[in-house]
Image (cartoon, rainbow, N blue to C red; front, side, top):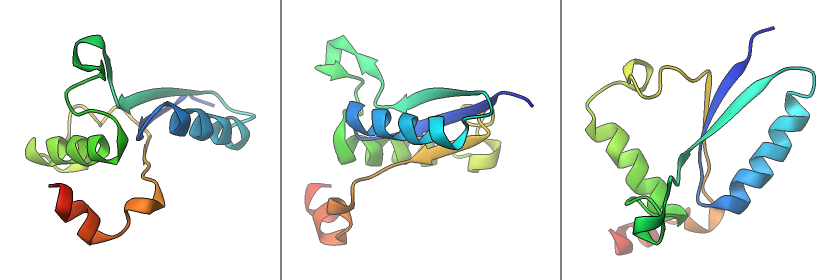
Length: 102
């Protein structure tokens, strides 16, 4: 079977570790490659790229993808992935919380 390419968009390192553990169980008899799309590591911006970490970083990353003007299925940056996982903690589910920050 072919190697699955999985992109993950997470708030931070702990989320990546948990998702990777779950993927190891789900794909225990198959190969996969996991690439963390967000947060990107960049030591010039406090350890992460300009979108930052946390739920705000996930939100900004998603906005950047939308602003590229492609459908997700046609986006050249995302087409190479078989699966894209976008993770947010449930504590930001309230719309009022999001709107207060942005």
